[in-house]
Image (cartoon, rainbow, N blue to C red; front, side):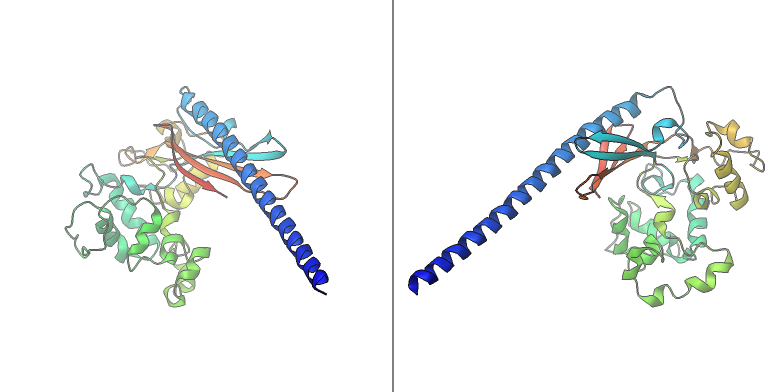
Length: 311
């Protein structure tokens, strides 16, 4: 009986060890594959950055350019679907102040307040400025708090430190992240849909960290273009239609669009035609259904990667 029991125990131990060994081997193989893919992605990203930086002859960045079309790269036993996209498409949250870090740029003023009006949250316009600016002096109708960072945010989620800044306000009431917001905070969205307000949008639909001092008109969403000084929704729609046919290379191209204002003085400090930041999205398709990929953002002016995420 003792021999039988001992044999059973030994078999169980051997089975457990074999199972443990298989798990460890699979884990090691997955880690090896992950490291190999990361290395391949780093080489690919370096080549793309070099290519974008060396392209000095084209002075504009439009989705119509061939290098911004998705392409497939066969790497090892997988197909990598790669999409390069110019950014600088929204209000530059890091460049809304003058060099003193506290004074709102003159050309940005109307756009900033119009954005909050559209979102039906005009009450937050100055509060967010006080949160971001370098000084500790409250703006009219606002107040400074100890929780204010008084610097440029490193991530848009830092704005959630403001009590009034719910996920619904930051990301939009229809976003997945808005589920963290109490229902009472989004109850007024539906009644306001027909009021001309953009209450389904969040701050991140208008603002971004990844933008230089000017917004690239070739990639900016309609909702952003329509609050540019002197523009409206009709003109914004015409710009969106025009850039689907041909890139907008300069102010002369913009002025040729029907209805565009004759004077562009208020726009010259806000509107550009090229981008400083670019996104590289790499999605991996393989036979093992492991999928995954990488999302990378880099700064063309420095060639530095500013964001690297696994997807």
